[in-house]
Length: 445
Image (cartoon, rainbow, N blue to C red; front, side):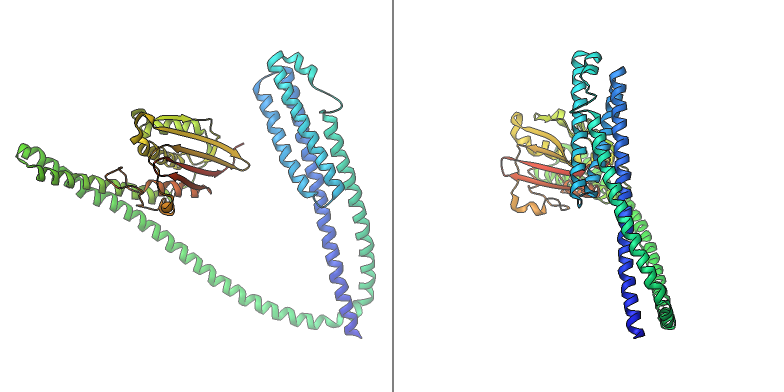
């Protein structure tokens, strides 16, 4: 009988704990809703204040601050709609408030256009204070949500108090019997403490192993740096000697070289230069993976203009059309390297077209993603081999057709993936190729 009573008390206690947890969760939920409503109300007020500042003195700064306040409010409105998704009445209230906020901002935008066209007086006259598109609609929707949330919270609080009172009564009558299980619980706790001690010792061993592996990784990185320096210094010097002595032979021998010997020397010199280019590209590829990311807001049109000059667009007969590109949140050094490789490829592989060569650079923002496309009407490639396109030393064309080391697109993929994005390509042989870069919008507003 005592066992049954203890089981009942324990079961009821667990039920009450779940109820209490639900009540606490609902209180936190209600507080989050109220906090979000207040924040949304503050953003609406800032939007109104900046709009009034704009209508008083004009100027782009007030207008930009107004639109930023609207963007902040819109994010909070979406968060509010998510919090209230399981409460139909409140969800309707949230949608109404969001619609009113959007309508208010739309009127502000329309007022801005009137100011631009007719002046501040006309803009002030066109700004509604009541009715459709006014701030009163926004505040009314927020007040309705706040009032209903307070009512729901009061009801939940009253229910939780009644349940807590009932639980205290049951607990009081069951306390005497509950004392009997203290010994059993103590034994279980001691066993659990012993298990915890064993787990703690295992965690300590794992932590030491992790530290050891971190030291090994750090040592490997240092060795890789030393290896990169060795490649850069010890391999480049012999290549320079080979190329230099070949040139000296060509100059000293002059006309004494027959056609075959001259071709042999030119092949040796070209192979040495190509080996040097391969070493440079391998070093660039290895260093990109270790360079710390320093992301900032990038003006992609300005970056494209600089990269086109570096890629030799001015020396190419190709026509390059650059559309308005959305800004990116990225590391400028890394992303510049990716664009140099992509635009250089577009210019190189469209060169056989001569003056008919055409390159298009376009971009767009879609939600939390910015997307850029580089399209050319060059030689293209066979999509059956597209899975090898971004591998190191993978080439779609022979060396005697187009120069290159086969590392450029591997660098592009590494840069894009380090930014959390993806790169893809579509092509048709003889008709051209299109490379697409997708990056997270990140901190770009």
